[in-house]
Length: 373
Image 1 (cartoon, one colour):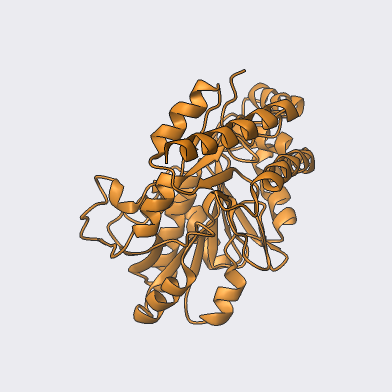
Image 2 (cartoon, helix red, strand yellow; image 1 turned 60 degrees about the horizontal axis):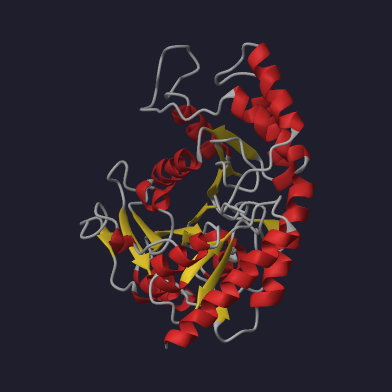
């Protein structure tokens, strides 16, 4: 029994539509499936503008470009314990100073008290929201509290989560989505840029497609090739058709985990903020007193279970540590969470017998730590 931390749920229609895209010869950045994806996501998320792109990192880079263009921002507040692409996207052009804020030990997201102090001390800075491991930050509440602050969302892990009854990624100025192979809905690679602002959408669409003007081969902006292919979009169309089935399967797995690991002293799970719904992307546990992640990895691998670590502090990355563009005053909680947290398998087709095996292994690992202490 070898249980991977994640594998995609691919349907016959995803493959059928991909073959159809190939047979149509529209295999690059034009074709009917791209339009279908735009329309389906607009309807699903109740958002005005959806721009499919080649991956979530590109979508995040568009956030940075549009924020600079629309609001002339040069400072952005960021979490200190997220996937590296969230930071990199705002460093690609050397246009931003990053101000990092330590995380909360219960939610694994921003420490909201520290975030509030940072906003008050940096009133000209925008705020990047990252829904860590799918745990949703209540953006509408933050907007009400700080009406003069511009919020953008890296919603790559939060996709299909909710705040105040709205889908995450829809209440901020703009947001990004990833459809990477380990995401709830996938196109292999792929992503999307979301906004309700027409001017922002038009600028993002322009630079997403090489800065093309209305006259072919005349370019008005320094642009990029961030376009989603028709084949990617075709795969995603098949995923969107069975979205409710995928969500139901993942909800069942997450419920089983929560029933075992919630309300314990030795193991903690993410605290879900009031008014929000976790996206149920991946399931993480925090084992109090775990000495180092690698020890848990060895133990679980010996039982044929793949796990993955919680994201590292911003200071763990060679190109970010001591970077003059980044201000990181405290990462104590981020370091602790990286030692004590790890991610369990949580893909849709995970069998009940496998879930039981994972839970048993986790409980035995906790017992092994107690014996050593």
